[in-house]
Image 1 (cartoon, rainbow, N blue to C red):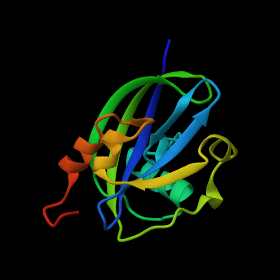
Image 2: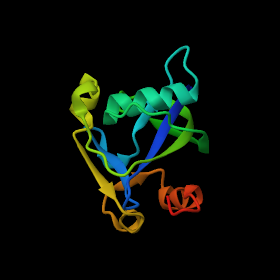
Image 3: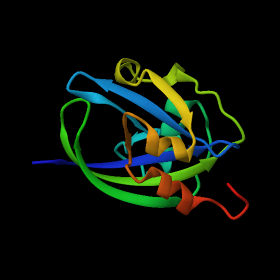
Image 4: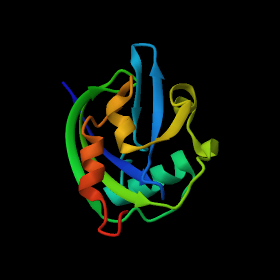
Amino acid sequence: MRRPRPASRILLVDGAGQILLFRFTADDRPPFWCTPGGAVDRGEDYATAARRELLEEVGLDLDCGPEVARREVEFVTIEGVPVSADERYFRVDVDTCEVDPARHTDLERRVMQGWRWFTPAELADHDEAVFPSDLADMLAATEQPNGR
């Protein structure tokens, strides 16, 4: 039986239109890339979790704005737990950003050791898995009329 996993994910986009992704490495699967974010803690709503995750994983303390997308997916977490995830996405546009890993958890330090900014075109051509698989489409659908 899969455990329910509400989660908040952040589409962090810089002034050049690139999105920040973290590279996960685990012993039981090939490396993969995904957006900042994670499980909603007890007592949190999705927006509160998005803000906390953005601070913990990236070092930015910002209101993440309204939810812009939702995905329901099933997977096995890095800890080996089968989950049914209800992922809510929030788009945050910044001019520039340096990742500050000071608040990463022990697990994140072990499995989330790399990060980089991707252009939408690079997502399709990358040689490792990127999640969600329709990330480039999600970015295009959430782009603001002023180009961000």
